[in-house]
Amino acid sequence: MAKNTAFKIEEFFSSYKRFQYKARELILQGDDPTGVYYIYKGHVRLYSISASGQELTFTIFKKGDLFPIRWAFTDNPHTYFCEAITPFEVAKAPKEKLVEFFKKDAEVSFELLSGVLQRLGGLLERMEYAVFGNAYQKVASILVICAERFGTNEGAKTVIKLPLTHKDIANLLGLTRETASVEIERLQKLGVCLREGHLITIVDLDKLKNEANWNSS
Image (tube, rainbow, N blue to C red; front, side, top):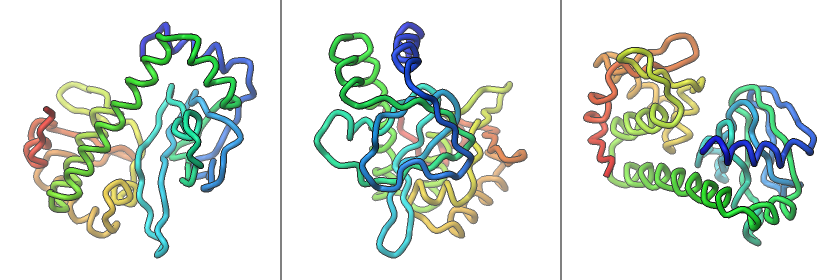
């Protein structure tokens, strides 16, 4: 997000109360929200739960993101869950006020649309691998997506600055935790990634893309 746009959004939310959540604390539980959240710090995942109890993560929001945007700009109810992955700080504004704010500022609206389309692109890539890829390719592909969205370059390596467990990765792909663990171990043995503390480091991003048969076009 452009610095000027981020400043405008932060300025808008500065008049609203901030809330803090602990890691793994539920923020929304499938019910209608009371406002739209702006993230000052931390990460939160948007997910659903099947009748059998299986979780599927649709996206992970980070600093500067807004949620739930779909609920704010449509008449559709919010039926999903939102959980903090890390310690989390947000401000919450009434959706009517936010919509009015976006209607008045074309630059802010453009940035919002760009962010939504970027996340949609990641979701479409995951859908493609969900249909055509095997479990190994799915795990490799989600690590590529996370590296590009949450990673920082440290020399030749890319550190994913998000503490993802094997269960988190499985929930992003609709896999069991055991399957995700097996495929992550295969990638580690190949030398393309490793775990350092709570974070995953991508040792060779180009090789990881090859393992996923990645096509960024």
